[in-house]
Image (cartoon, rainbow, N blue to C red; front, side, top):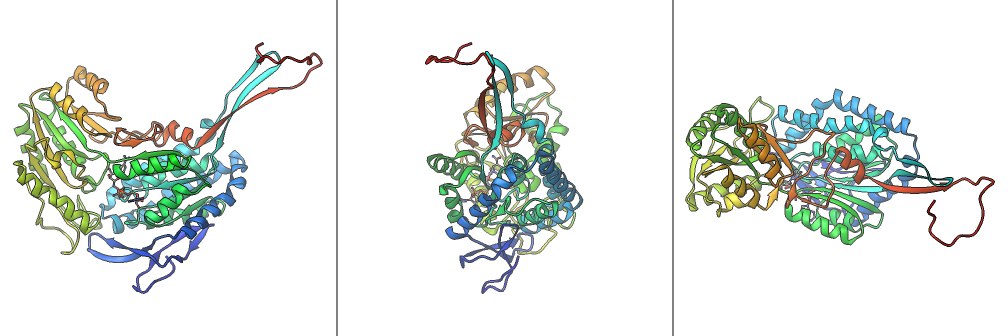
Amino acid sequence: MTDTLDTGLAVVTHWISGAESPSTSGRTSPVYDPALGVETKRVALASLEEVDAAVASAKAAFPGWRDTSIAKRQQVIFAFRELLNARRGELAEILTSEHGKVLSDAMGEITRGLEVVELATGFPHLLKGEYSENVSTGVDVYSLKQPLGVVGIISPFNFPAMVPMWFFPIAIAAGNTVVVKPSEKDPSAVNWMAALWKEAGLPDGVFNVLHGDKVAVDGLLEHPDVKSISFVGSTPIAKYIYETAAKNGKRVQALGGAKNHMLVLPDADLDLTADAAVNAGFGSAGERCMAISVVVAVEPVADALIEKITQRMATLKVGDGRRSCDMGPLVTREHRDKVAGYIDVAVEDGAVVVVDGRGIEVDGAADGFWLGPTLIDQVPTTSRVYTEEIFGPVLSVVRVASYEDGLELINSGAFGNGTAIFTNDGGAARRFQNEVEVGMVGVNVPIPVPVAYYSFGGFKDSIFGDTKAYGEAGFRFFTREKAITSRWLDPSHGGINLGFPQN
Ligand code: NAD
């Protein structure tokens, strides 16, 4: 943060060519401390000239980084991993102060991002090409996995550190140079990581941060020097990103929103299931794309399960994430009001509000963006409470008569990000993993975010494009393959033959 505009607040600004780059656009947007409910900073909103500057920095750094030896690149990534691991507490405090999630959850977010950094340290193994000797007499064919060039990463507010880390460690390891456009709601985490990269020895210009809104995003989508876009955010924007980036000739992966169901069979361990529902429904105030937002209870299990969930909800301490609470505030006042509005909709639509989080007492400032954990039973599947992504601490219960009814409900939804089945019946679980049309499935695990050496991504409206995040898919996305056909002349060569070579 370098400059201030007329607000007197510090401005989070771009990071270009290895240094903070004061904003020249004259446009900024507020950044809040959600637990205090006050604006603490501003964030710069880039102009198209600033988009050009960030991309030019990455473009200039590309040839040097691409041609840096594997051993040297690996040293830099190891150094970044060590620094991040040692200083993750600092980053967690930044996350809590701008996003609101409790400190322990912020540490968890960083740990999941670190996993991808650790995967990236092993990149030499994942970037090996293939070699076939003598495909024709004296002719060999082999492949190279080469970086794309300048890659763009556009991230959402709910994981300001982890989601960028789904992409940039792999992109950088593979030899690309990066421009990250973080969410304007909690922009500081990526700047902090930019400074860490510099300390780790990454050459200037390989990692750039561009803050902004639609102007910055559209600038990246249309920029001829940006070769790919990795996006995570809401479904309407993901679809727009996918279409616009593709129209501009870019490789694109765009991960969208979610509405994740937990199917509970009557034989499930209800204590385990209730713990899981509370953890997955209210962790990070429900602002997770893998949060459970609908419990699908196969009767006669609903009443007993709701009782157990309700008991656990009564023990949750809501408050400032710096004060050892279980659940923090929502990210902005506007978002809190939108989420709370769904509780009104539930009442209008005839659902039963079992626990109402409005007006909750909190351990924190009165002006924080609070909404307590909320449980709504008998949600009609026609209600907007059921059909729309709420992205807050509102857990719905839908009662069904059978496994088949539950499965049909889940498969008829627009999203397909995550889901989980809770049961003690291995056969039912096996059938579910086969039949459910969702990209990430948990069996007695409520938030089945794959470890870094698998890949993250859903189905249907939860992803646009055909490449998931991280894992081997990440390496495929950030490289393009070149096939070389080679013949070294020997004394027997010669002759003219206009046909395709065959043997
Ligand atoms: P969002 O779509 O509002 O914003 C995401 C990014 O897009 C931000 O950087 C923002 O600046 C930019 N953006 C917003 N409006 C834009 C526009 N009109 N044109 C161009 N760019 C625009 O999402 P959010 O509110 O920050 O994040 C929450 C959403 O992200 C939820 O829907 C959640 O499910 C989703 N999400 C999905 C995943 C996943 O892996 N599928 C992971 C995390 C979050």
